Amino acid sequence: TILGVQVDPVFGPAVMFGLGGVFVEVFQDVVFRLAPFGRDEAMKIILGIKGTKLLQGVRGGPPSDLDALADALSALSRFAASHADTLASVDINPFVVLPKGQGAVALDCLVVPKGLEER
Image 1: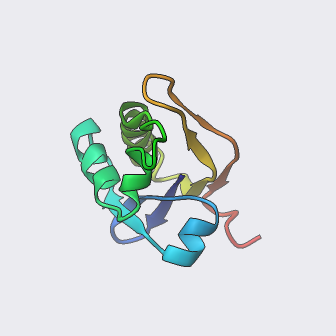
Image 2: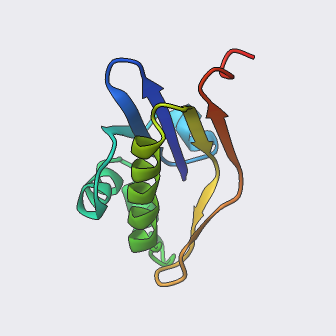
């Protein structure tokens, strides 16, 4: 999956979620929400993408740990809201969601402070 934040000068921080890797480029299946939000809203975001079925387990594959993913999304939204004055963007891709009960892990992350986004 991919998680991200873009801080808009008018609306503030918006959190983005979608399937990562080539899926985000090909399908452009992403959802945006203004930060901050809680775990319930995070779960709605996860279920709001078309590719959510891949995370729920298909063709005998195990379902992903959607609880861990929802916790990560809501935590990212709180981070973005509390650092909106100094943050330009965050890009976490890939964010691997392990099988149910096993958590999730960020494999790559770029945090861009405000003022450094054009360099």
